[in-house]
Length: 379
Image (cartoon, rainbow, N blue to C red; front, side, top):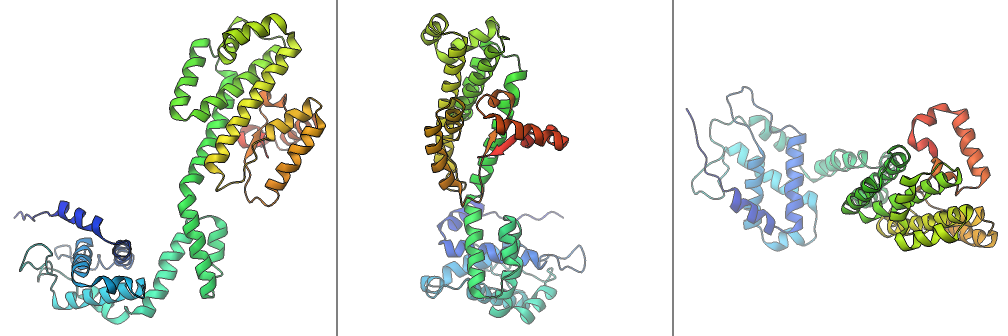
């Protein structure tokens, strides 16, 4: 036999969206408690109905209608509110009575439901003390476990209210910033992918333009970073006399036709290489500035690291010292720092000691050669 139930989902969505934040949070906590305690899974046989999320939604809908606003907002205590609503649910389960919110005289808990186990558990254990401990261990504790290792370690040492408050604050901070962390990680992965692709993709003028256009559609900073990597790649080609007409055509795209013509007619090879390196550093600095703008709240980013490296490389030691001093002060107490790649096209910006140290790392630990992170150094 088939049974049909009227759906009020659209009306429910309108009502739920009108709830105050505290009401929405309480609804979420009640659902989490019921699910975690397996009160929706207490049937003795597969034919009997059990408690489900719709009963919790109905309970909260009635509470939002019948309880005055002051009940929710004065002396706000989420545990108290949840405990009182669970006590109401316990009475409903004991009486096998859950009045439908939209349909008069409709009971959502008739004799076909097996809710005795859930009612017994709620009667015996649910009070404010029990719920306080339960939410700390099963809710805040679970939230801490999905955060960073530092947050989860702090939770393991929670022995006072003050420490608990600190952990909750850190969880909130971590969760609010986690999308930024994920985005920052994704951008870092894109950097590696671009740097790996450029020297091995045999780019043509057409594919270079397409790369720049498509990367700009994703994020303008990727196009800027791609141009910087290409400029360094071309500079490396020119310095080793391994460039060809295709490389020169790509260079014309990167520099613009007029500037390119001027460079080819008035500059010798070393001067052209220096110009390309300088232009690449300018692009990389712009890229760093965009990174600092978007991710500066979660990670310390100095924007002049490539400029400082290049200043040292060309012998402008006073400028290098000035930038490096500023950068050290910025990064001195940083908990996280982004990385500088040491791929072949970037080596021309690094001083010989850094290059030698990187090479030594790859010699001592050959596994680094198989992992892109093995050829990156922190700022």
